[in-house]
Image 1: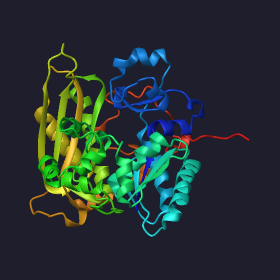
Image 2: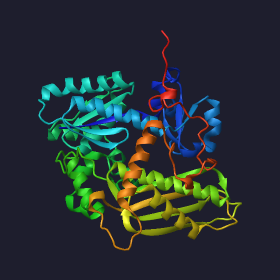
Image 3: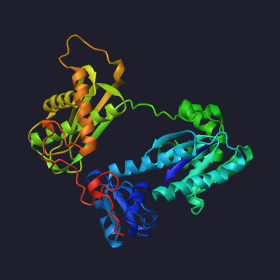
Image 4: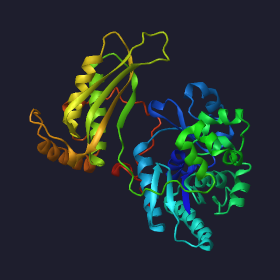
Length: 421
């Protein structure tokens, strides 16, 4: 049996842990640059606050109902996610991190009679130790566990747990009223197609002919079709696979025309990519840098472009990647435009111990590795970018707006909660 833990309204829940006065109030968390709504409390959902919309489009609704808004605090959310994972690792033998707020759990080896008690313990323990409310779905497959989790959250808000047993009739009964658009992997992309063919529920989906599913969705659709019937198609992957590419992309806090400021931003994005590469033990062979104006500003001239740089030797050095990113930026930057966003993507990733050397490279990978190790250690101890490249600069006008940012309660020693007894 497989379980899926979902941290409910995760970003909002993280904010509430350290600010209990937000309990019971409508709360939303905003995306980079405070642009769009990316997390909502149940109270905000009940008011009709939509997900993913720009704040300015629902400003009247937010102000009318005094909705509390917070800027996204990703270091805090990442740390809280790690704490949830640490607790789960003490309760189950294996788990797979699916996203920052979702984890698959391996419940194999437990007797059916034990599962209910264990599920209640998991839900209670995570909430007690972190303050994050979670829901848990248990089923024979990942896809059914996702369905069970949705049912737990929607229909059993107090228990926050639902189990689908390995029984064909029970699976059919559960899926009889389960909307086809709520199936993991269906969503907005395929839901209109299935409804056009009179498939409204998950039960009707699994009753469709395999050949028709294959013709409509390919091999992936067949795997999902089998999983929804209770036939596992893949096992848990406790060792998360390295990413195939890494991206750092941000909107600027204001429209920029100054090349120097944009260069500092792009260099910083390349450094972030390099840090992520080092954390997963990879090196990149290709770097792509992109630059965009604001397409929403129809009153301004529009321009966007990108440049791809192939490295002579794959690298995870902040120095090398920043140099390549700046080379790419110089090739695409044009005067006369007000730029809104830039991004850096690194790809063709290889393990750092399998990098193919060349006789014609001027880089010194061993010296770079030693220097990066020292920089990472110092920044980990003293804070991000305390040691930085000159090209990153110190003028942070390019940084995204975070006018409603909460404290780094668990990530910054100067901002931890102090209790006075």
